[in-house]
Image (tube, rainbow, N blue to C red; front, side, top):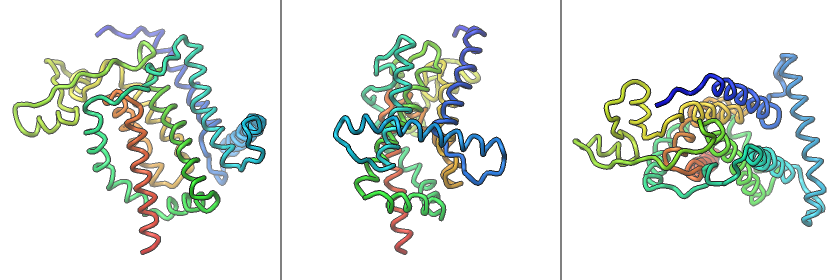
Length: 293
């Protein structure tokens, strides 16, 4: 495997800093009660950017027939603008633009297996998170402020924006070559039952004598140059949960890394989106069950 030139790594580091700043200003929810002057300044800047953009969206809403829009409807449009439209525009300006290079692809043959197993593995952490009073209060307050259908629509648009940014744009833009890899190889079966089980969900792929991190990558079934985009996608996914319940925030970085890996391994950003939808739905049901008990 050829070494990546230093100038590319420098450009990659600069782009990571720019995207981090973009997410910090336009997406993060810095808690208003943080006492640092820098945090207060960032909180003020975030609110100003959000209010300016949402006000700018009002004429577009009226143009399509929505004379009066509540704050959550405007914020859903804001998320689509900043999480989908602007990254896609940037992608076009970089000379790309095809949705397939952003992970909008059909799920490969191990995808549904990974989706099922990942959901089972995630159940424990999801239920632990749903028992947190802060998590309960945050989402119940949202449900009370918006009607049931309105909450589902708002959450749906939030998921689209979040996953397009993290498991679409970032996984494409920060991989060498500026695009998603070709569909990864998959080998079934093995010399014993354990290896066969791992290979059933896309793991334990042949390493072909490789050593070190290259062997780890091949064992995971990943193409070259996937580590940095996966880690950065997990970092941004964590930033998007800044200011939320501590348990949710604690799980967001490892969860974001896992979702990014699943996206690459299953050849589609739809897989992590479906997994996140399933786990979020389970968390909402758990909130109702814990509140009733």
